[in-house]
Image (cartoon, rainbow over all chains, first blue to last red; front, side, top):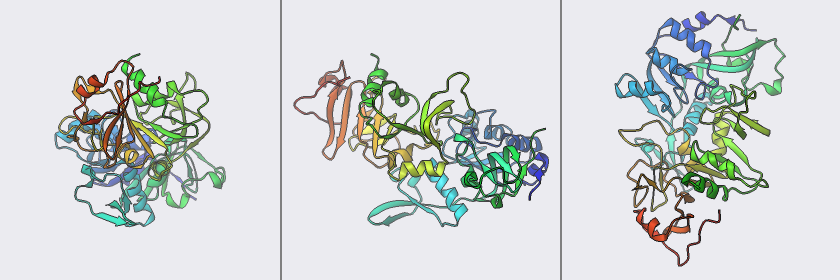
Length: 217
Length: 216
């Protein structure tokens, strides 16, 4: 059984320069209270792995505005002009990865695979510097796994075992990221008693989750 | 009929019963407005839903249900919410029948460039590379020229989205099919002539004896 962790205690776990896997697609399915706590704390230098950097004032956009992000590994930054400005100014390093490749690299990191072979990116700038492997007569790019120091997860419900389920399009990167970090911090809309989430509905088994954030009062 | 409506109406004719279809943001998403009532299709939004409905009606907004452009949407009865690994598994795994995307350039090989303009626009490829590499059919829907400057060119000068021939190019002036022999002019837009299409296209076009008009 777990106890709910206070926001500031969860934020204090995360050291300067940590690699953070952060769930969300344009801030849908991003743990906003956890982000706010990181902004409040002000420790940064993070490498953020996420689908995108959201919009200014939302989700990961708040970390960018606060100057806490050193590097971004994402599929899209186009809707956050601050990320682009900081990239051009040399304040943030940006590595762009095709969305389907990014999720599979994180999945590989979480499930003990040494990489992913994909045809996405062949013949494009994504191919540069990467090994091409031929399998059954087809060419593939070898893409390497990604792991994080911390995964910051947004769930619909959590129970006190850490079991999680997710809402609609707020799944996105969350269930995969919950497998790919040393420490997993989950922020749920609601914390329910053990057993209240049917085993069939659990998408992330609680054994993967280290901390569930306390609810809003 | 304006250019975008012509394009959306013509692309809608390619959507067949039983398909799983992914529509890009903007012009491609207009295709849903022109589907015949008797065509039963499921739309995928790559951020995680099979069975995307239209924009959310007032009172039905759900902050956790958006399309790939972040717009609040609805899901149809029978929809499924999925994570990004399953969503892109559908795309790369040959389960997505059709994707409709915009284009910056398409060339004589049928290769598409649609995700960046070096030095000007570097938003990131999002899911575009996976969609073009993985969908069974890739339809490029775009206005024929960029303010008069040809977009269907001998060889893309912009970085490619994928090293794969797209299935069809639909513009307000023409339907063009990339083939082993090159780009074939299949149909003309409601107001276009063969001469106008050739003039607005720097790529070499193969022009059959008769080129019908789009049956919009």
